[in-house]
Amino acid sequence: MAAIIEVRDLCHTYSVGTPFEHDAIKHMDFTVEKGEFLGVIGHTGSGKSTLIQHLNGLLKPTCGDVLLGGESIWKDKQTTRRARFRVGLVFQYPEYQLFEDTVFEDIAFGPKNMGLDAAQVKQRVLRAAEFAGVKASSLEKSPFDLSGGQKRRVAIAGVIAMEPEIVIFDEPTAGLDPAARASLLDNISTYQKATGATVLMVSHSMDDVAVMADRLLVLNEGQIEMLGTPAQIFAKAERLQSIGLTVPQVTSLFLRLKELGLPVDPATYTVDAALKQLLRLKGGA
Amino acid sequence: MLKDITLGQYFPGNTIVHRLDPRTKLLMTLLYIVALFLCKWFVSYGLMLVFLITAVALSRIRPKALFKGLKPLLVIIVFTAVINLFYTDGRVLAEFWIFKITVEGIQNAFFLVLRIMLLVMGTFLLTYTTSPIALTDGLESLLSPLKKIHFPVHELAMMMSIALRFIPTLIEETDKIISAQKARGADFETGNIFRRAKALIPILVPLFVSAFRRADELATAMECRCYHGGEGRTKLKQLHYHTRDVLCLLLGLALLAGVIVLRHFTL
Image (cartoon, rainbow over all chains, first blue to last red; front, side):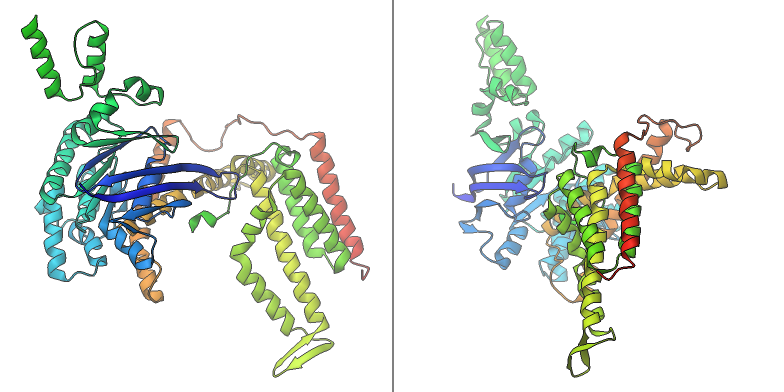
C-alpha cells in the first residue's frame, strides 16, 4: 500500500512569546497508508487534536512538514485550500457548527464551497446523508429542531459530502448513548468499505478502536509512544496503563485469566478471538 | 487571529503589583488617568512615564505584551497624530499645497500619541496583573456606597464578572467554529466586503446559538446553587487594605499633585 499522508518531523508550539507558551507536538514522524483505518489514542492533552488539525492545513507547523500524496500541503495557497477538501475533518461535537436554515443546505455548504454545480451538490448531499444515517424526512427541517444524535449525523454528512479521500473523526461518539454510538460507528465502517476512503479516528474508547482500526497511533506528551496493529499495541498493556490509557475490556479479562495461570494470549482484543480461545480451553479441559 | 485579543487577559504572578488590593489598583488607575489628562509639557509626561515603567518593571509583565495591546489602536493613534499635525494653528514650520505643519502641531501630535499610549498601557497593566474576579470584587466594594441610592451594584459586578469570565471561552469557541467551517472549505480571506460579511454567517449563527445555550446552562447552574442576588451574600475572599496599599495610594496622590503643580511651568 502507498502512503497517502506523510508527517515529517512535525512540531507545534502554542502561544509563542507569551507566558502560556507550550509545545503541543514534539517532532512526530509517521505515515498513513492509503485506505487504512488508523485509530489515534492518547489521554487528554497528548496532542491528538493539534495533530489532526495539521493534516488538513488548519494549523501551520512550527517546524516539519505534512505531505499529502507526496506533496507538501504548504507548497502554495491553492494546495493548502485543496487539502481542506481532500482531507475531511469532523471536529469534536460537530453539531455546534450547524448554521443553515435547512439540513440540506447545511450539508451542501462544503460541496458548494468546492464550486460544484447544483445537480452535483444535490447528488452528493443525498449520498452523504444516507451514509451518515440522516433521515430523508429531516432534510427540509431546520437543523436546530433535530435531536442531538441526528444533529451530529448532519454535521458528519456535511464533511463527507465533500467526498474527501481521507476522513478524520475526532471522538465522533462523545456524549452519545450506547445504541447511537454503535450505529454511528457502523455507519463509519460502511462508509469506509463503500468508498475506500482512508479513515483516522481519534477516540478515548479502546473497545471502539480495537475492533475498527487496522493500526493504532498512541500519543503521549506530544510524542509518538507506539504505532502498530491493535495486537501489537494491546500486548503492551502495562505501558499503556502507565501513560494513563486502558486496554479493551476483553483484553483486561484475558490479562486477568493469564495472571490466574490459564494458557491464554493476553493480547486478545476482540470478542471473536476471545471466544475461540475460551472454546479451545473448554475443549482441552 | 483571535489569539491577539488581549482584552481582559490576566497574567498570573506573585509580585508586589499582583498582590496589591484590587481597590488600590483601581483607584491608582483612576488617579493615573486623571493625572495623565492634566499633563502638560515634558517633565510631567516624563513623570508619568517613569511611574509606568517602574510599575511594569515591578510587575514583571513583559513590555512586549503591553505593546501588543496597542496594536489594535494603531489606526486611531496614527489618525490622531496626523490630524493634530496638520490642523493646529501656530508658527508655521513647513507648508505645501493645503497642508501646513506648525511647531504647535508637532508638539500636540507628540503629546497626544504619548498620552494615548500611556493611557492604554496603564490600563492594560491593571487587567494584566489583576484577575477578573479580584477586579469585579474591587469594583463592587468601591461602588458599594451607591447601594444607598438603590443602584444595583452587586448585579452590575456579577454581570461584569460573567462577561469577563466568558471572553476567553467565547474566543475559544469562535476559534473552533472558524476551524470547523474552514475544514468545510469556508473562505474568509478573499472577496469584496459584502462577500466577506456574508462569510461571517457560518460563524455568527453557531456562536449565538452556543452563547444562548451557555447562558441558559449558567442560569440553571446558578439557581441550583441558590443564587438569588446580592442580598446577604458573603465573600470567600475578604478584601483588606495593607500598608503597601496606603503607601501606593499616597504615591498616586503625590503623582497627581506633582502633575498639577507642573502645569504652571513650561518645562
